[in-house]
Image (spheres, each protein chain N blue to C red):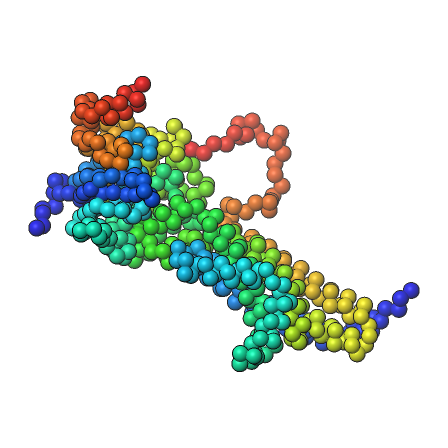
Length: 260
Length: 245
C-alpha cells in the first residue's frame, strides 16, 4: 500500500535488530522508527550500541538479525532461521540515499574540497559533471566554504572539514543523513558552527538520525530522542518526555549523570 | 704505475652500451610486470578470501626466501623440462618480475593499509563500490606513498638484473665479461661497466625524485624552499602569530 508523501510516513523502520561480535551481542533487539522530515537523536552511555546501531542502518556494520526497512525497500529480514540481506548493489543504492557524516570527518585526503563533494554525484549517481559542480558550489556556499573549494582537507580546520563532510552528504540529494558523533572530535569552540549547520538542515526539513553527546542541542533540535543502553532502545519520545520525565531507572541514572 | 689502456674505452664502449640497452629493456619490462603483479598480489592478500590470500602469502614468502640468482637458474633450467622454451631475455624477465613482484606486494600492502579505514567507510557511505573505492580513493593515495620505496626497488633492479648474465642473457655485465675474455683487461672493462651502471642508476634515482615531487600536491611539497625563509626578527610582531579560522 502506498502512503501519501507526508511527514507522517516512516522512512526507516527497524525491528528486533541484533548485532553480535562473536558471542557478544552489542545490539539485542532494537526497535526504531524514523519518520520523514524528522530529526532523531540517539543518546546513551558509551558502549551501549549507539554507533553500532547507526552503522547497521547503512550496513557499514552488517547486522546479525532483525529487519530494516528503508523507504519502500526491505534491506534485511529474517525468514525462519535464515537472515536475508539484499544484494550488495541494492545496499550501495540505499547507502547513496542515506550518506553518513563521521566523527573523524573521513574526507578523501587527496582530493580538494570541491572534488570531495562531487565524487558521489558524478561517480556514484553518474550525474553530469558541470551540473554537479554547480550544485556543489551552492552547497559549499551554504556551509560557508565556497572560498575554500580548491583547498585540500589537511589545509582546513576540524570544523571546516566537518562542514565539507556535511556538504559531501548533502550533494547526494539524500533522503536521510546519518551523523555519527559529528562534534566529538572537534575543539569546543568549533562545535557550535557544526551544530548551526545541522540546525539549518533541520529547518529545511532534512531527515536526520544523529548520535550525539550534545544533550542541550538534542533537547532543542530533536523531534524524537531514543535512549539506547545495553543494546536496546530503552525509551523513546519527545525531548521533553525523555529529558524531563524519564521513566526507566537507567534513563534517570543517565540523565542525572550528565547533569552533575 | 699500472698502464691503463685508455684506448679500450672508445673501442669497446659501443658494445658495452649495447649491453646496457638490454639491461634497461630487461629492467623496465620486468618493472612493469612486477608493478602489476605486486598490486594484484597485495589486493589479493588483503582480501578476506583465504583461498586467494593464503597461496599468495606462500608465494611472497617462498620468493623472498630464495636467492634471486638461484631463482633465475631454476626458471632457466626447469621450464624447458616441462616443455616451455623461453628465450633467455624472457626467462630473465619472468624471474626478475616474480622476484620483485613479491617484494613490491609487501610495499603496496603496507601503503594500502596505511590509508585510514575511515576513507573506505566514507566511500561506502556515499554508495561507492569496493572497486571504485580502491581505484578512486585508496590506490591513488597508496601509490603515492609507495613511490619512493618502489623507486628504490627499481634502482636495485637495474643493478640486480646483472645476475641475469648467469643465464646467458646478453646484458651489460655479460657483454663486459665477453670483452674481458678476449682482451684480458679486467680492470678497465669492469670499471667501464661499473661507470655505466652508476650513470644509469643515478639518472633513475633523479627521475624517481622528480616524479615524487610532481605527484605531491603543491601544498604538501616540503624541503623545497623556493624562496629563502624570512628571518624571524625581520617579521613585524603582528604577523608572527598565525591562526586558522
